[in-house]
Each structure stands twice: as structure tokens, then as C-alpha cells.
Image (cartoon, rainbow, N blue to C red):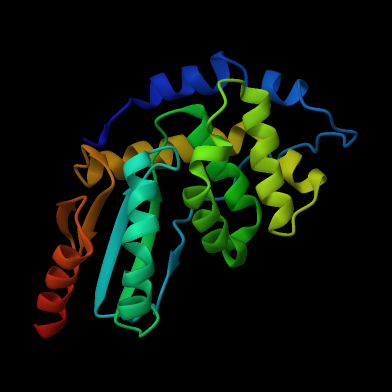
Amino acid sequence: MVKTFTTAAATLALTFGLGLGTAFADTATTTPAATPAATPAAVQDFGIGATDAKVVIDEFASFTCPHCAAFHEEVYPQLKADYIDTGKVRLVYHEVYFDRYGLWAAMMARCGGEMRYIGIVDTLFTTQREWAASDKPAEVVDNLKKIGRAAGMDDASLDACMKDEASAKALIDHYETSFKAAGIEGTPTFLINGEKHSNMAYADMKAIIDTELAK
């Protein structure tokens, strides 16, 4: 089974109605919150691989989806070695927010910019059982900040990014628009050169990629 679509309105209720600010208020910090920009920058989807690759895979995934984590642990390393690192495939991430933890994870990952993003994504998936396991939002925030610090960010930057409600709403709007436009019904879902596919084993993905490369 894959996780299925949750409306942006429901996600917003989870994110703000249950207290993004409260979760941060419960964490110990001596860093004052930075004032976010009134108008956040346009949301960009980050990717890995040659920009002129013949095959482009658009991956729609949630950082709290166990099946997405399994894909990144079991399939992604082979995909990267065989196709991404060799310039044949570009993988573009499209974040899906089923819950506030997934949204907070995305906000933290984006805080480091495009250069750090891919490495942080790997960590979020490989350690999903650890950082997302708690039912206490403040603990999850602490866990995410530890990942951010390990990636070279400081508390001031992390606090500013993860408290920025304007950016959070922009991310949710972007997610809902791209999710619906692509006709996505669950995660993980892949568009391989525009053709939609559900979660799959590496052998199946490899066969599809090879067919596209042979065209």
C-alpha cells in the first residue's frame, strides 16, 4: 500500500492548527527567531543528475512514507550508480506533505540550499524510523535540527527556516498544485519521461529506463 492524497486544507490544519510555533516553543533554544520575508521565493524542485539526461524521473515522495524510505534504501543506490552517476538519468524530487512532520522535514532540508539538499534527503529517508518515531512534535523538531546541524547548518538558520509560516504555506500550495496536475494518487509515484508508474522493484524500473534510453 502507498500513502494517499491528503488535501492542503487538512495539511494546513495539521501544521498550523496543531501548532508549528508550539513545537518550537517547547524546544530549548537561545537563538531569537529571524523575521521571515513577507513574500517567500518561488518554490523550486531540486534534483540530481545531468540536466541534459535522456531520461528524467520525477519522484513524488513524502519524507514520512515508509514505502518511500524503502525505495531510497533498496532501489535508489542502484539507480544512482547505474544511471544517475553515469549521466543517463536525472531524478527530480517532488515533496508530498501528508503530515506536519513531513513538511517540517522538507523545510529543514531546504534550509541548506540545493547543495546540501540531496544529502539531507538521503539522511531523512535512511533514518526515518528514528527522527519521525516520536508522537511528541518538540522531539521531532529536535531530531530534525540534529540532522540539519550534521549537514553544517546552525541553530539560527534552522530556526528561521522552520518557523517561516509564509514559506510553509508556499510549499503546501506548490505541492497541491503539482500533485494534482500530475494525477498522483499516492507515494511513491514516478513519472519516467512523463509516464506515470507506481512503486516498483529496481529490475522493473531498470527495464523501463532501458526502453527509454533505446528510443
